[in-house]
Length: 160
Image (cartoon, rainbow, N blue to C red; front, top):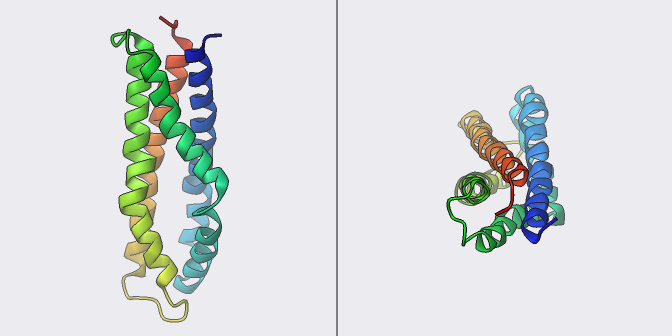
C-alpha cells in the first residue's frame, strides 16, 4: 500500500462516516422532525445543535474529509490525467461545495436562527425555515455521497 492509497483509504473512511451520519439525519431524523409542532421542533433542534455544532467528531470528519484529499492530490500532481487524480479532485470539490461551504454559508446562519427562537413564541415563518433546513441537508447529502463514491473509485484505481 502506497501513501496515496493510505490517504485515499482515510478519505473513504472519514467521508463514509460523515455521509452515513448525514444520511441518518436526512432519512430518519428529518422524518421525526416533520411530525413535531413548532415548539417541539425548536426545542429538539436547539438541543441537537448544542451537541453537534461543536462536537469533536464533527470537526474531525469534516477536516479529514476536506483536507486529506488535498494531500493526496499533491502527491498525484505528476499524474493530473490519471483516474485517481480526477476522481479525488471531483470528490474534493463535491465535499467542499456541499458539506463544507453549504454548511458555512447556509446551514450555520440558519442554525443561529433556530437557536435564537423563543420556544413559546415562534416566528410565523418557522415552517419555511424548517423546510430550508431540509433542502440544505439534501444538497449536503448529495455532495457528500458524490465525494464518498469518488474517493472509493479513486482508491480502487491503480496508483500511478
